[in-house]
Image (cartoon, rainbow, N blue to C red; front, side):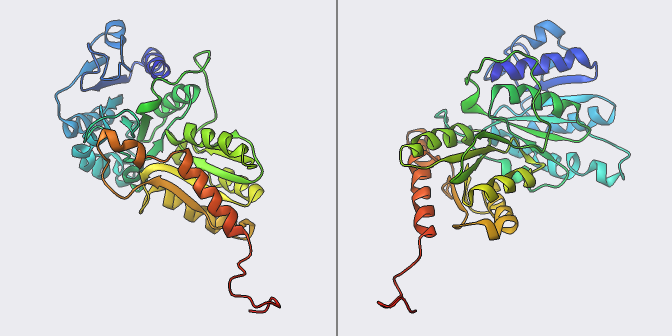
Length: 333
């Protein structure tokens, strides 16, 4: 996946002289995860360059560059490092087009390596997608596959609106035989990664491989699970998700972020509103706990895993069965 993102950046720089890549250590070093490796050497330090360690300054600089006609792609290095830039993102990046009645576009891509699974310490692992998804004016994209990483980033760079491009850190080293450049479905289209009939697992980004693993494990227990990869949180594919849940009648939403007031809660609410009469059981969520990201040695207990997803499926099965605890012997209440 890291190679696919690198290729997308390189192809975008080649295709459009307005595209610039900058951020902390993205130049000579090639980024902490080496995602931008070789770009500065190939295209020069006027197209891919390092900045001071000042996330708010990086984002503010990108706003000015975009207003001047460029298409900046900036990197926040780690998810929690982006918080000092949030005022710029929420107050200016997200609102400029609306504030100017469409006269000023900000075609900015903010790349954010996010999520857990790599054993990092505090401020280096966080699931911050909910902050951006809750901010009108931003598109929020998170690939789970190698080909989507390439295609969605190319689309993000071409988009006239600002895009928060959330890159799952633990999937940087995932592999797939893909002939780049690869183009997949556009923003706002979910993808069925595994068809099934008994229940729908809705996931995005780093949770998609976990959902697929859980679906394989559940098959041994008689479940035929469908796995839907959102691909983009904003825009959200209401039609695709609802169509899957209406087919299966059950839904479990999987997300690494904390459960309370998160993206998973929004997905569950939208499914319940649109699929109420098709549901055989309540919509359930398997998420991170409502705590700060734990130390690396405890991370495996915090992140959604196969066992917790299987427990949720067991609850779906029980909730689908009639409750006879309050019936007398004749079946009357």
